Image 1 (cartoon, one colour):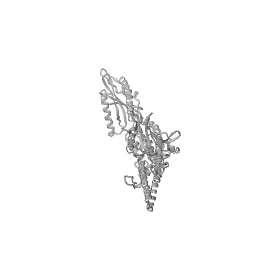
Image 2 (cartoon, one colour):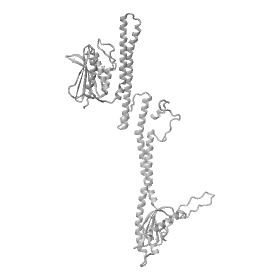
Image 3 (cartoon, one colour):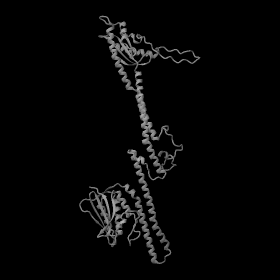
Image 4 (cartoon, rainbow, N blue to C red):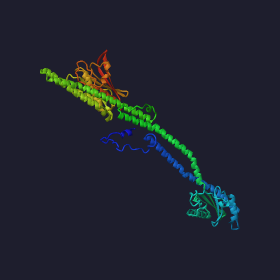
Length: 540
């Protein structure tokens, strides 16, 4: 991975990363399989699932729903039992009272000790009957473990009902509940019984007309058992959810973390092993974001590789082109001391002057070519009036023309509309200057270089024509290569660097256009060359 190789870098200045003398730090999730991203995916999935399981096990809402349902059930049963006891155990006229014997008998017939505990209280809150006592119910408790051999014998069980603070608090809570019921209220809620167990309790007054004869209390302690059964029922779903979550985590690790790690290793190979491009065909075939990323990285590294090849080729061409005038200069300087004839020395000095000018032109054009990419990427394109730009350039040539030199003429487009293109004025001006200088160098003395502009159908066509010997058909494309300097017979040697047309095409293509070369033919005879510059037009 990239992070692994980065730690192996030597110490660097200028804000670079330094190697940790303690070595690589261990991951918090090193025990999980896969890469760091894969371990993180698994850990986060398991963490989220654990939170979900914890929330399901708490069951707050389910517990409250069960309590409410149990209260409703006990209330319904209690109201029915209270009505029956009122009918069966009410005695006395005109002041009614409850017969304890009949009430106890009715409670014995109506109560279900297995489902709940029923207790009956008189009008003063004193207990009359208890379903646990009526049904002769005996509570069973497991004996504690025997003491080790040599001890004091078996440990005796504690009392069936603890007599501590818990029991006293439970009896006090029951008295408060019965007291409220004696006031004619239906009381329901959760409380603790004498054994400390949580019970759902309802207390219903037994009422004859307006007279309260007693209170019926029903208790159910099966809420915890119901919740336990609900939790047990959730266990299969929890196991299935864990299996699905773990499977999805492993799948995400295989589909995301491992491919990302492969991309990082491929990038490290490009950086450390001298590889020119990333190549991962299997990932590039994927129809997802990782496939897009892989294809983009492959295209990016391929473009960088091509740029590096171009730079290497350019450096080799520059070395070759500069070596020629330097060799000529060295030969002329070495010969200069051996020549005493003034005319020969004068010719040799002219050669030295021409070589120096040629070298100066080469260095200037090489500098322009090397800065071209940076200038094109730094300046933002803006609307450029091409007619005005060409007019200013041609006017400068006309103002500095000398007698007998090649003249430059501009054929302006017809129509009132301006010719607007989107580009960089300085770069486009360099294109036309290079084309005009090239055309002038090939035209005979007294010749004319003509610049014309046409526009329509969403494009602009600019032409630069000369009256020279033309271009051989096999070289119509070669003239745009760097350092191509094929000259006609009689042309001055070293007058061109061979970079002007290459720079011009590069600028035009960066503006979304095209630059081509053709010959001007009349009656089968070549009368010159013409360069066609095509750019997209911007409507105003």
